[in-house]
Image (cartoon, rainbow, N blue to C red; front, side):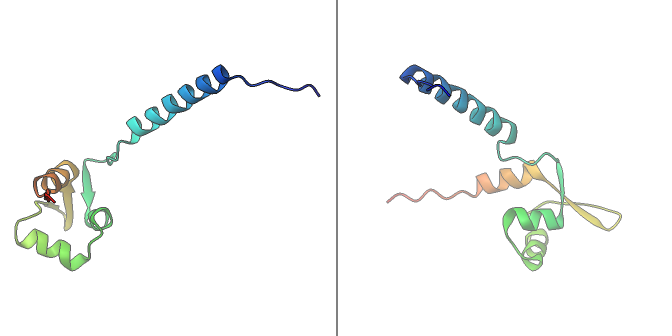
Length: 92
């Protein structure tokens, strides 16, 4: 079996291909849900909160929701907008 020589240019090319693949994966995922409407358990999982906390967010009007047939739905974009709007920037 013969020896294969890998050059610096081969490594650079491999790096660029790998970066392109990673960028494509991140662009496709981009941290966003694929669904527009989330059910309560999905929101609790997304935010890492308990059922009681989710109920409090509904009651005090922090988190808007839609109710259809006894099922509560939350708009993913609205949740993200609320999170961004409540972001705190500490200056140290």
